[in-house]
Image (cartoon, rainbow, N blue to C red; front, side):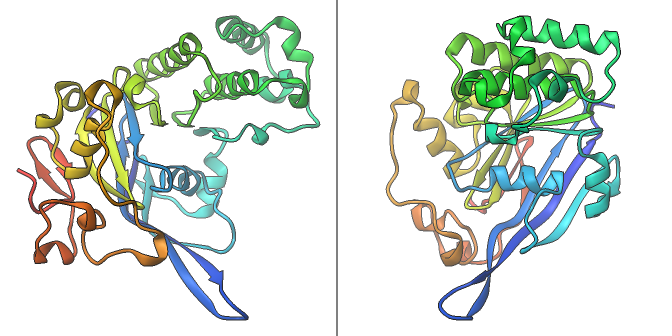
Length: 309
């Protein structure tokens, strides 16, 4: 079962219908041919710089994109391609999101009701109390409203909500900011335990050094597309085990690996280069890099690069 994907994203593209000066309209493509899958029992970490499409992917899967968004490609759950109505039915039941913003908590409802859900039984109430203890949330936290929580407390409440949801697929979008190192590690351990119980976890994070040690696979995003899917062990082994030039640069940019920057910057969605989106910053660029670059299998992983071997 673990070898079969429960959630699959294939050639996903997302555009926003925008207005410029006056009444001039245009479509801004922010995600292009993005590919991802996650299996029961594993954590897939999504790594990449800000603006690479990580949170947009989460919102696309959950059906939370605004009305001016247009989607192409496929998002499948248990082999079925999902419509917007399907996503809405699955949301909060089969799918759970730990959102990046703590403002997702309802300001008019006490914490206990938001975490436990409607009509909780004693087992769920006890489970809520147990996870609160684990996250060092005082028992009186249950009776508070969101505005009475600190940022770190609100973050732990959101993680608790996902843990108690019973969902098969959990997407955690930056769940550790505002937490100290010990509490961040505890949150990641909880996600590891959920995966070990058979859940599928997608973890979006900038704390990639911490996440590498909890993950099974890593998806590297750049400028709204997937450039590499690799085993987490490849990142732990080092640069030589990776395939894409950007993945290698990301590894070198970690503090313990020299904190080495690269020249240039991630392109704005309105001015994407032809072909490989990383090509303007890549030392291996050739004319062929300006053509469409598909994902292909290389050394047991998948990469969007014609030079990878």
